[in-house]
Image (cartoon, rainbow, N blue to C red):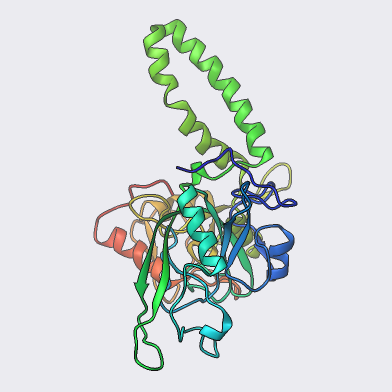
Length: 353
């Protein structure tokens, strides 16, 4: 069970959420990650601090092209523990000796599992290419450790003997369960007052039982609404800035009466179950509202050469022959393939985009 009310203060670094930093925030260098109090140093993969009883507990992990046994599937991670430099190959990618649960970093991460503490995940430029930024680090939210074990590495030691590793399984907390920032908490309070009024109206119209049943639905709905209203996801904002809010599919740039442009960050592989698409730049397009809907309902799909395939034409509507692509926007082909399969095989999208 995640202990949301538990904060271990060491300066401003804590277990869990760092005030003012939301998932998707990016940083130029590891030193910037440290200065933001997301991680304790600029080299280690595992960050730790002292718990109330003085023992070390892990608060964060950097994923940046670690060991060969690591696996990253966005919502789930299989992570190999740490070792001193003398137990690694010269390039640091492989182990030459077994890992130990007594090693400080591994012990701290295992203790966080035992105490039910979440850890922050930061992805670096050398991580999985489906998720990583080309030259920056990004904070990707809180994950819970679901299991720990001693496993055997894929590669043997130089003498042919098996190498035992400290292995951890992690699972990303659903977006509505990620900690709210101060601005989001204010929005939540406003929504709570609004919902209190709605509950009173329901109580008056339907009686106590009807109001209670409707009231049970509000907390989850409120958490989702707060994130949608307040949090313009950092990853989507970066993509929209690349294109100056111009739609990649039709070239339209919408400007309101306040002279501010409007565009939407559209996820190619849908977020949420059953799709599990990541909220990362490589899975996001900058689209106008109309083209966003077209993408979501499969009226258009994108080929690997960026050609836009119009599956359902709308008379008078303009679509570019190819998706407009900025040189710094590296969409991963796996997401394009997933979207094509989703619609060309007739399964359709069933999760909120």
